[in-house]
Length: 275
Image (tube, rainbow, N blue to C red; front, top):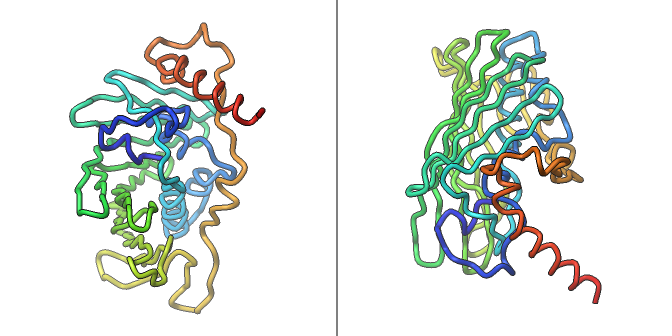
């Protein structure tokens, strides 16, 4: 997903995937198999809406592939997708440091999203940890609620090779005083358990009383459990959207900026598969 594009490293085309870093960000919002945004907005109780927002937040961290790099966006590059009533627009607003901005609206659900991401890599010998600075905001305008959250870090390990999301994420809704603390963890160097695991809790900030444990939420009052996020249902079998009318695309769009490079990668891949 992010990987080497975060670090301004020049890689041969063999390691590129035919999409821009901006598109990878955008796909986490519009390329879904289950409408989690609708769940966020449709629940009657504030606690149920908050649980749905937590699930949606987790869905934004997509699986990563070691050694595969999207294109590093150029300054002013844009990526826009409309899917039903959802409109998503991203722009690379800074190149040094790399900063990506996102604004999205869903007219039917009356939802607005505002993001600003600035990955900052830190090198630790056999691993690199990219801290993603910036905030995400999800606004449920029908309910007058704004949910603010940060992002986990992307950990790149060279020995043994692998990638994973790590670190702490905090989600807060000022209007309801509900908060969540999530901890993303991975395997240790010796292979101890914990790969791709997320643990945490939902609590009332005014009383600090824990209401739920995550990701399979457990009601602390009655002990009942239920799954709030199933990655296979949400993101499996998804296809990258295709541009139907290249003539109608702005020159700054990712599809236009990288069209020649993408065609070269895809044609070379096709020849290899045909052998």
